Length: 414
Image (cartoon, rainbow, N blue to C red; front, side, top):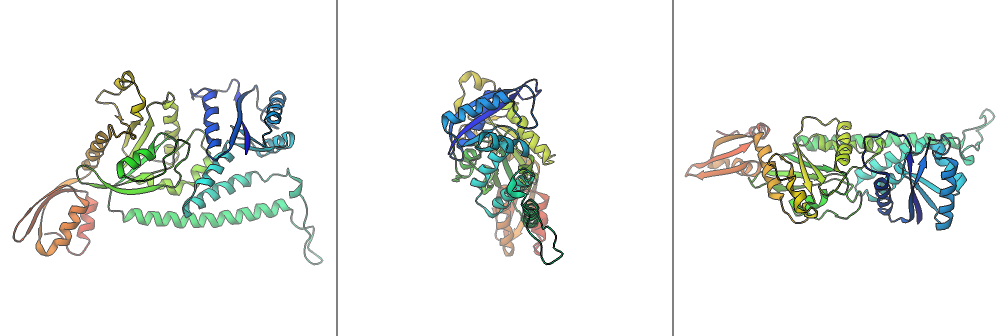
């Protein structure tokens, strides 16, 4: 479908975001291309003051009309948050379909969700968004349906019926997602390995790093939200400690709050992580703003007290002078997920942080407790043993929770 992308620039609007309007416009174009839309033109329009009726003024509206007619585009994407009334008025006056930023991201998420949980979350976010669009603006929603019998009255309007159906479906989705949340909570309580969660701005290379670490085959593509459904894999650190690494959905500027709320069940895994690896794009000139966007989502999720390792990816895209900025020992980890350079440094840091949470134990396992020996090799780190005629002397690093699980098997260690 042919579309035109417009980014309104509100004059005198104060913002801590240093990214120029052209960068935000380019990001919106990439969002549109992520769902195979053909962007025929993208441009900025100035807005001296927000209009309650159309968001933009009459002059900007006429400019958009002329360009859309010239490009014969049937879809207008406004890179901003439109009210239901503003969207309706733009569609009526331009005679084309109009999507705002929230609607565009919802379409991308709907196209990318593959798991049952992901589809539930996208549907809930979409219905929540659609519910706000049910205003008395479309004539087909104002028709009355007749009642039953002699006392039926005028009946319900189509608007009221649609709203009631949406509310019913939302209640059902919330119950289903609550079951998902309970199942995830149960799985986390039985999880035998530490969890390392990869997070970051969209398209910073989280999935490439994930594949580099675990040898996986998660989709890697140069587009926003290439990964939507979370993926978890087990792999071993250099110390021998096995960990679970999670590749989560990337974030973006002005991420709709309804989407954050809908995906809270998925992102709850991050809240229970032992370590969060915050992946940055070292080659991006706007990494400070992207970092602020990600930290804002982390704050919204109430994530506190979890160690965060800052990883600067795409080192292969830097020149030698830029790399010197990361040469200080106190600097974050600089690596290239594409080439593998710097990844051993990351693994060493993860090992150090996770071993700090463990204590060294010296245990003798008699021959009849061979299952405990196997368990210690499976869950311990830097495990060494000396075999004797009666059993094994084992030295390893384990967490107190690991020992509790082991002693809870009914066959405690000597």
